[in-house]
Length: 422
Image 1 (cartoon, one colour):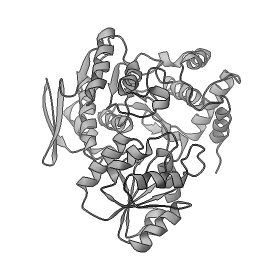
Image 2 (spheres, one colour; image 1 turned 45 degrees about the vertical axis):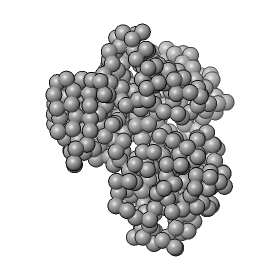
Image 3 (cartoon, rainbow, N blue to C red; image 1 turned 90 degrees about the horizontal axis):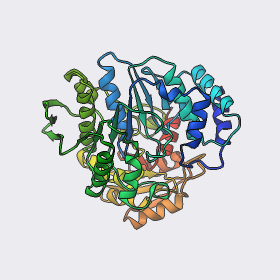
C-alpha cells in the first residue's frame, strides 16, 4: 500500500545525486527557510557512537517516560515504515502529520540539492519544534561533526562505544573516526561517554578539554557490572541495584551504564532508572521473533533477528549467543557492500553450523549473495546462497527442524524480514 508520504519521500530521494554527502551547509539553508525550528526544540539529548545508539536512546526514553514526561525521539534507519524514525511526544508520527511536514520541507527546499537524510531530518526537527514535549532524543545518522542532526545546542551529549565502521566517510583509523563522533561535543555541555578503546578516549578527552565540556565517563565517573542476575551501577551519588536490561546481550550492560548516567544527570528517580531497564523494547537487536508468518513457517525452529553489521556488532552477537541455551545455530545473512563482511563474521564462526547468504531485496547497495557466502567461507563457516528469505529458511529447516535461526547482517535486511513476517 502506497501512502502520500511515500510519494514525497521518493521525490526527496532524487534531490541529490549521492545518498551520503557530509556537510551542514544544505541543512543550515533549509532550516533557515523553515524559520529555524532547531532553535525551538525541547531540551536535546544528542547521541553518537558506532554501536548501541538506538538501544541507548530507547532505554533513556523508557526511563523518562516512566516519570510521566513526554519525549520526542529521532532514529535511523527505519525497519518497516519511515514513521519509525520520528516519535512525537511518545507516539510515532501519524501518516497525515508526516505527509504535511514532508510537503512543507519539500516546498521550502524548492528543488535545490539536498540529501534524503538531510531533508527528512529537517522534517523531524520541524515536527519536534511544533509539538510540546519535555525532551528531544536525537540519534546521529553517520559520524557526528557533519551529521545532519548536529545543528542545535544540546542539553546533554552521549557517545556510545566507538569502533571501525563507515571508514570511507569518516576516516580509516579509530582516532579519525572518533574525532568525527566527538564532533557532537559542544562548549560547556556535559558529555556522557561509554566504554572506549584508549586511543578513542584520548580523542574524546582532548575534544572535551578544548571545549570546556565536562565528561562523565565509564570507568572514571561511573561503573556498571552484572552481579548474578542484577545490574549494579555506581557513581559519586551512590549505588543502584537494578534488574538486568530487557534487551538481551552482555553489551547492553555497558549501554545501560551510559543510560543510567544520563538519567542521574537529569535527576531522574530510581523508579525511572528501573523502568529504563525493564520497559525497553528495541526491534532487530537480538530480538526473538515469537509471532508472525515466518515464525509459523519455521516452527518449531527459533528465529532471532539482529541488524548489527560491523566487527563490533559481530562480537556483541557472539557474546549474546554465548549466554543462550546451547542449540544448533544457523545464520541467514544479507549485507551492504560498504561493510567489513569478514570482520563481522569472524566472531560468529564458532557459533554457526551454516550460513545462508541472501541479497537484500530492493536495496541498490546490497552485497551479492555469493560475495557474502565467500566471506563466510573465509571466516570458517560452511556457506551457501539462496534467492530469498523463504528459500533460505527452507534449506535450514529441511535438515535442522529444531534449529536456532539468526537472521543478521543489516538493518535494511532486518526491515525486510519484519515486513515479510507481517
